[in-house]
Amino acid sequence: MTRTDDDSWDLASSVGATATMVAAGRAMATKAENPLINDPYADPLVRAVGLDFFVKMIDDELDLSLFPDTSPDRTQAIINGMAVRTKYFDDYLLDAVGAGVRQVVILASGLDSRAYRLPWTDGTTVYEIDQPQVIEFKTRTLADLGAQPTATRRTVSIDLRADWPAALQAAGLDTGKPTAWLAEGLLIYLPSDAQDRLFDNITALSVPGSAIATEYVPGMKDLDLEQARERTALFRQHGLDLDMTSLVYAGERSHVIDYLRGKGWGATGTPRADLFAANGLPLPGPENDDPLGEIIYVSGTLGR
Image 1 (cartoon, rainbow, N blue to C red):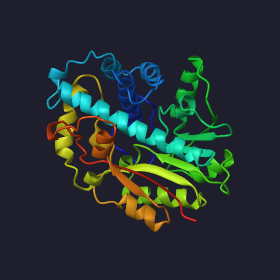
Image 2 (cartoon, rainbow, N blue to C red):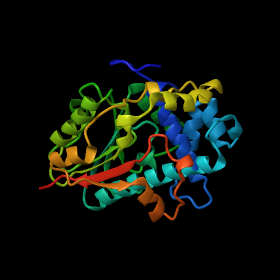
Image 3 (cartoon, rainbow, N blue to C red):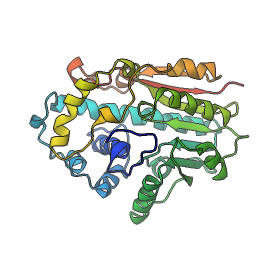
Image 4 (cartoon, rainbow, N blue to C red):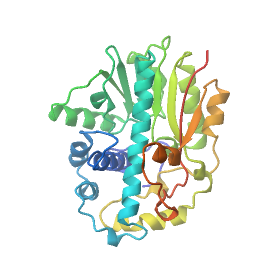
């Protein structure tokens, strides 16, 4: 499905299906022999969405021989990548709350279950922003599972292309107090100008002591769309109608760290390879690396 300025989605289509894909990765990482993360809700949420491809993935029922450039080593590298990514952002949020922040905003929250699974400090409020269908599905599914948030959870059902800052404030965000912002797995689905506008809006809503975390994919400017399309063609042939190349925005865009620093954030970057090493995981070889190339995880605080 080609992106348009007013497209929408649920968790089985378009950008929403990528949230289900990420949750499948968390489910598999949770089941690892020595897991770095524990997301007990990822598996049932993926099953509730009902995309057969991802259900087979978490049940280890996919025949990897059907997919070129895919092997058990590559699959494990992908799972490990999701584990270190999730842990990085988990640690960031808990560190921010440990430093006294009591407002957390998760942008494009998808099937993120941090409001239910992290040990939040009393008095913490977690705001989740996403498309109305996405918010409604996750809220209902987790309620049916008997899950209870471990913080005050407030949902903001709005597209990020709309006036989400106003909606967020209407939901209760206090712009006079520090906020921890999370934009995980979001930027590649935004055009360059929308990425800048996102950070401009975040900065306008933040006071000194606020925190931010996201990731930067330098390779997006040189992404070979045809090569990427070829690598995902067999996915569609086996029941997954997900053409990543039609969902992401390649080409030049602002350097995330530099842009944030220009807005007053003390942002620093950690290459994914460093996270693999820090967590005692083997670095994936070139043949098993992410098609997007290098990924740099970014976090920082707004200066005083």
